[in-house]
Length: 211
Picture 1 (cartoon, rainbow, N blue to C red):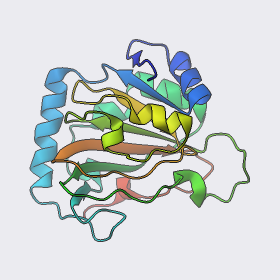
Picture 2 (spheres, helix red, strand yellow):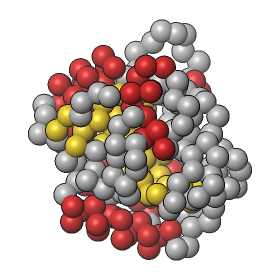
Picture 3 (cartoon, rainbow, N blue to C red):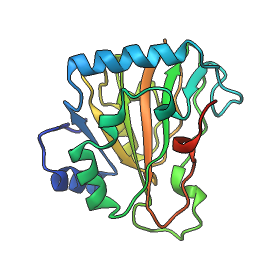
Picture 4 (cartoon, rainbow, N blue to C red):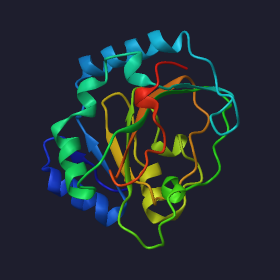
């Protein structure tokens, strides 16, 4: 299992680990009171959020699209100096896309194994096109409880990392092959994507007023 890095780490050090290994986990990105506030406000929105419409979204999973239109509890996380420093190093120019609050229900099935940057017709190998982040707001035994069947050394190491509201923040760039979220028990998290500014956003949910 790979060691985590602290939120006091320099952005270039976190970015170097991300580029070397395909992912990095950073601890201390949220204070315990901040995690409690985020958890409570996400619960407020979840009370009126439907479960998924297809197997990829998850029939037993609630996904809060247009997150910033429904809660302001995650504003500061989107502009955290360490986060932006890593993005500056890895992507240079980027845009926020697809901020989603997620609550995985019991019995949920994992998505198929996929690479999120495959939507872009760019020949392999290529530099990182998208960086993803996830803030877990509930206790997980490991990220593997979210992504069973992780593929490859980097993904397998990521899946062995413990997670919980003490807020270890995993970054991964989108050529990392992984399945989607799987069975949980009301496990909540927030996922964000930052694609390179030269590409169309995978999703325009920041601008979406509802769903």
